[in-house]
Length: 196
Image 1: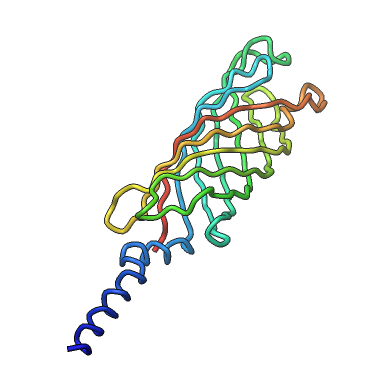
Image 2: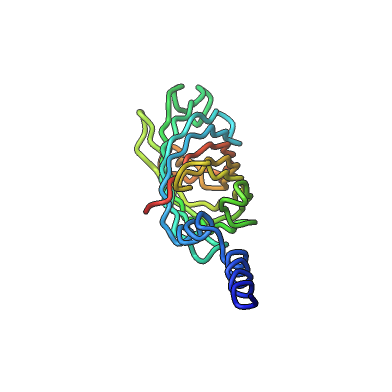
């Protein structure tokens, strides 16, 4: 009688100690590369540059459970006022390439679907006007956000809300004169997918 009881006890103990199948499967996914798309509204701290919408894409490479390395490319469509730096009112396209290090507050998984994160990095910014040669600048940025693991079958889709603050050089003025650095704030929504 003791042998069957002991066997049942050990089996139950093993089931309690082992992670659930869904949790174990998701832990394997924490080593997966993540790709995503973003849609943002950007505002500029520079007089004459009103900001505008921005679309982009990102790739994230995990560094353990807490840290990620993110590469992001985006294109923004900003409105230029007549008073800005001797340029007739028109649209300006701003492209940016940024590299960031992010740290998650918690590890997303079936038992914790909502988590916050923060980080920062540096990047290159390119400005394109219809009536002036293109120019570029470098800058730094910081960000905070929250992400939610969507309840899909394989737990691969993640919805994101994010706030970014950028400090970078502005477009060059007439004659190639460097302009004063400026700030821009971005409020973004993103959808991300963990690759198999």
